[in-house]
Length: 105
Image (cartoon, rainbow, N blue to C red):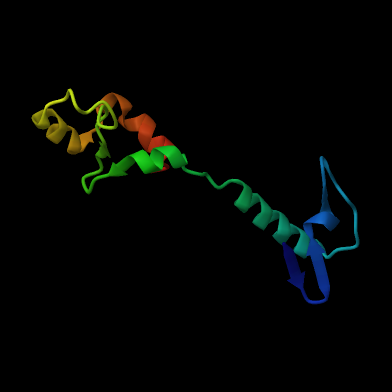
């Protein structure tokens, strides 16, 4: 990442070393701008990728999930039971807050 202002070119390698700031003759305004951009990028939250693939948010804000027991050993399950397992279910209120926090909503 490079930040340019006028003739000065600043890179991360020139400014930051692990644990300390390396002193260079750099315009202080450029350095402040670089620190601001660097700090903003660092604070971004990421959603849990496994949770975002398994859960969806409905229009009213509820969390929708798929039902379990539909992947294997299906011969002993009745057709009626397998039909019911196709339909999505709404997550219970006990798990609602926890799942919404990991998918960042």
